[in-house]
Length: 172
Image: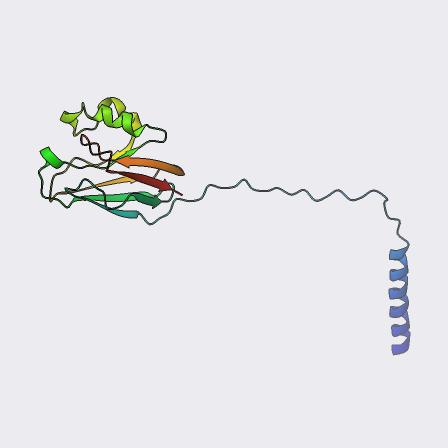
């Protein structure tokens, strides 16, 4: 009995194998499987803020002339005036200009904006962020979101300072 079952099972396997080899195959190539590629999602904004400390003294210089952050990152910037001279003679601020703004033209407009800490109101669209004007021994803080990737200029808009007090704000 065991031999009969074994013979029948072998015969069934043999016939099944032969049957599959006699199937007619289409001469047309199979259509490729449809695939979709998801659109590239924008990179998420970094969750950790960029902490920036910028020092400026009576020598009319920032201690940092290049700041690097990520696009969309929160920037917490502290400006320290490390000098001793008063705001009226040696005031400092930080002004981050929008892309393409001419630094010299902006500084010329700032000369006429004494009443607004040398931040010209008619150039508001040229400014991404700015601090208030501070004198010797003072500090100020601002928080803003970094713009899109690119290189931006920053400067001190106190009269005559931008020539020596400027730098690059690089957004990666």
